[in-house]
Amino acid sequence: MRAYKQITLKMIPGLLILLICGMILSMFNLVYAHEGHEDDSFKRFGILHMNGREAPPEFRLPNMKGEMITLSDFKGRPVFLNIMTVGCEPCQKEMPAMEMLYKEYKDKGLAVLGIFIDITPDNTKFMGSYLSGYGLTFPVLFLHGGSMKGLTLGWTPITYLIDRDGRLVGKVIGLKDWTSDDARRVIDEISAK
Image (tube, rainbow, N blue to C red; front, side, top):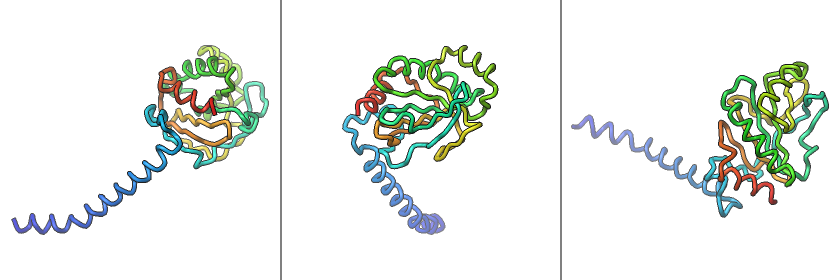
């Protein structure tokens, strides 16, 4: 019994530190997660709401025709930017939904862009058949042969949402159902501003 009390007493400072850290993180989340979002559609859909705190990834990347495309080419438009790889199963599952978003929102100004980080643009024969197999018509870019700053590579897919003012407002790592009502609310929100 005495040993139990000694262990318990020794644990109190550590538990207090954990409790304080938890409170600080909760306050941080409350400050940033709700900033500017009464409806909080970002949180409901599971998107990390960035509130423009970070700059979006800057890039100068080739498309299928070899033309160099930059983020500034889409100035004044909301941008749905998806980082993907050819062999990524979640990426493959997102592609039809991205195509649907492109067709539904392109006349409202939304730019949908896909960036393949694992293939070279010279492999256009393979990529042409690969993309047509998914019926993709939105612009596809390639990391090889270009430059990109501010990109976190790792797990794919990664989706960045950029508002009309060029601010990074959302980031998603992993598969999302972009055809859902919650997704549409988020896209409507970044497209309306």
